[in-house]
Length: 118
Length: 117
Image 1 (cartoon, chains in turn red, brown):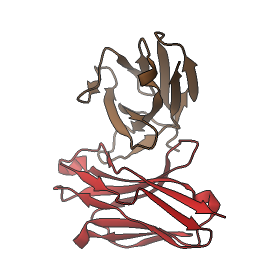
Image 2 (cartoon, helix red, strand yellow; image 1 turned 180 degrees about the vertical axis):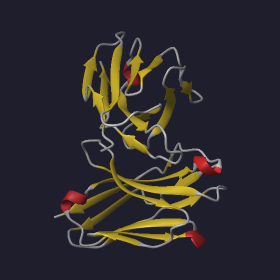
Image 3 (spheres, chains in turn blue, green; image 1 turned 90 degrees about the vertical axis):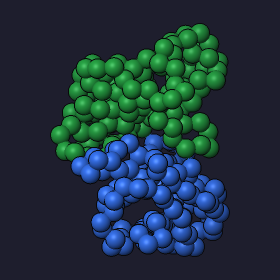
Image 4 (tube, rainbow over the protein chains, first blue to last red; image 1 turned 120 degrees about the vertical axis):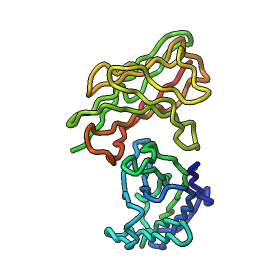
């Protein structure tokens, strides 16, 4: 069975601070995908990143960066110089790879609510 | 590309009425669509998998007679909440998976907020 743990329920920071959102996962699949989504107050899920389990390179996209550590089954997300507009709930998710016999239906973490104060 | 729409974006209805929510893949064909439910401050919970031309597969604990799913075409799935009650008030999100590529990901719609009075 797959499991995604986002231990931080809520994080509160002041604008311009850096913040890291943790994600730890469990899976028996050898090939899998990891995702991060942002859900602002409007409710729409905004796709941020999809990472294949074979690609352990860290990724940076503007103020966003992701640290994938297969050895610790973690896929952490860092926002640098946070802004008020970053306030949202962030979900980490995990899915298998059908080409390897896994399920494409993602398992979501419980989400981390990020509040950025001006 | 890969846009999924939902209609309506929000709906308020009286207890006992039925509500239909549409999910459309706008620029791709989706053999499989998914319906999720999200209560306030909680994660997304998969309700059912909708397969074009066949019956939906419901997750354990989801009443199939209450949440009717129809996937009549490769771009449209509908979720009908029958005889809605206040406890059905929730945020319903659909997603669609493009036909063809085996490891395709899901693309999410913007969600529909249902409030039952």
